[in-house]
Image 1 (cartoon, helix red, strand yellow):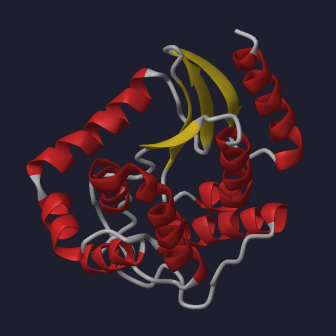
Image 2 (cartoon, rainbow, N blue to C red):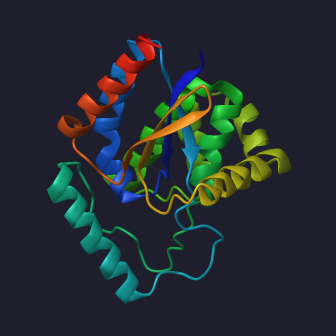
Length: 211
């Protein structure tokens, strides 16, 4: 029987940062039943584009404030989203997909490092040099990661993740799905606290144990 949790997220999605401690606890709960966590890159804002306008920046920072208040996760507001910043999440998503390809268990530690760097430290995680450094901290070989990250194969693999998410009709992140033998069950679309989701996951794991 094949079973896993599918976590559809974007490292530069603020609600995904808010959800990080929750999904970590859920992954631990699932791991106790022999069920692993598989990350899928959502593609929140991809394709480059123009630098943020002042009104968009204000709106995003208000959003971050709401996430901070709801979840307690830390945000560095001072100097966040500086003038000229292009909010393109494709490189961070590609870093996740590349990590998953090279060493699947390292994809979640890398996702957390990217989130911490962006939200907690105000670093520009759209830059390849920053992502390569974080990948190395997550335990991936620097040169191997850098080469794979730039490869056509990983560009295509990242787009394949985005397409899968769109085809499934997932419009918001975080989304957590439980998959058993190819059948998907939705645990949440959007942030929910651990107290709500742990019993849901527990029931799903129990059904699998008796299947």
